[in-house]
Image (cartoon, rainbow, N blue to C red):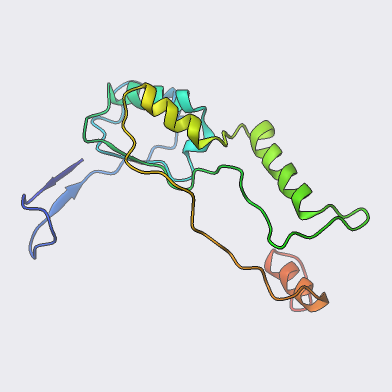
Length: 167
């Protein structure tokens, strides 16, 4: 919750009191009104961990209904679109990048229980009367490393915890 000096902006001397709740519990098992009135719910790396209807119903139950001004910010809601570019092909027993990413996404969904369908989440909020302010894909682009060679492989191995030349 937030209380402030009126007027908004960042006027010198203005104070804003903010209460932040960090709960280390199963979100679905919290009792109604545990969180009190919700003004901002930050679900970074969270919204894809629950079935969309479960997430929305739990939020509504915990807050006994979201206030009209409640903002739900759900960045990094993974949609299973990770890919390598350029993609390395299969080489003998070594799978291609596409195969690895497919296995990774399958593991997220089937073993970890992730929900990789943001449109289903948006639809669930809409069906429960929660308006959507904005949505869109990430503009992240992580460029590939320089052309792969033995030295690059050694450095990458060292970076992810292997021994490598420098480790």
